[in-house]
Amino acid sequence: MLETIRNRRSVRRFLPKAVEPEKIQDILKAAFFAPTAKNLRPTEFIVIQDRERAEKLALATPYAAFAKHAPLIITVCYNTANARRFHEDCAMAAENIYLAATALGLGCCYIQIGDGTEAQVGPPEAYVKKALGIPLGYRVLCLMAIGYPETMPEAHSDSEYDPSRVHHERFGQP
Ligand SMILES: Cc1cc2nc3c(=O)[nH]c(=O)nc-3n(C[C@H](O)[C@H](O)[C@H](O)COP(=O)(O)O)c2cc1C
Image 1 (cartoon, rainbow, N blue to C red):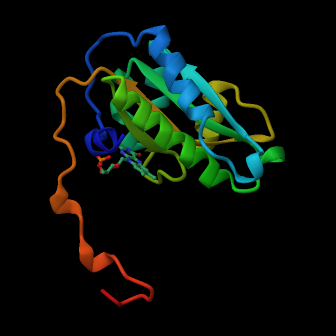
Image 2: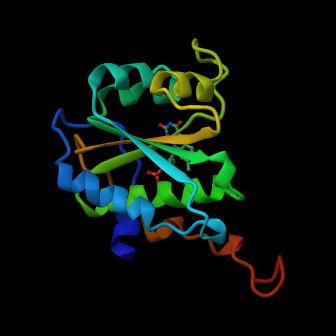
């Protein structure tokens, strides 16, 4: 598990190869296994493999542009009627998606749609909701772009561990 966490990197360049249905299923299961506040399970997921739809989503913000070439995009949504801590619930699911993709030899990247002032399409969340036919009462936290990586990025290294940001018992105490 620690090895998978270390190997998880954001991947933005993918091979033009479809992700196998069994792998998609495993990634979705991992998303459903994520913890949710009060176990309310408000998350919903939209699986996108259609090229035209991916191209449309890639316009949501300038930081989503690479998703145009993603063989798979999983949109992480939530039911507002059923969510107390929706950001946390969706972020937990998103991290499980990242880790499951990594464990399956895939690359993945989180795409935020909370803001995107430079985008041509207006507020990104409203744009994504419209593009995917998401009804009232549901919101979107992020898009997870997934595919076989063009190149395997370097794993995280121990040098990123920064003891100056770790405090014991009280802030400021090494
Ligand atoms: C909340 C959040 C929002 C992010 N939004 C984007 C995004 O819109 N586009 C993108 O290419 N990467 C996005 N990323 C990926 C980060 O850029 C990436 O995690 C960071 O550079 C660290 O690299 P690593 O994931 O390889 O460790 C986002 C990550 C998080 C956690």
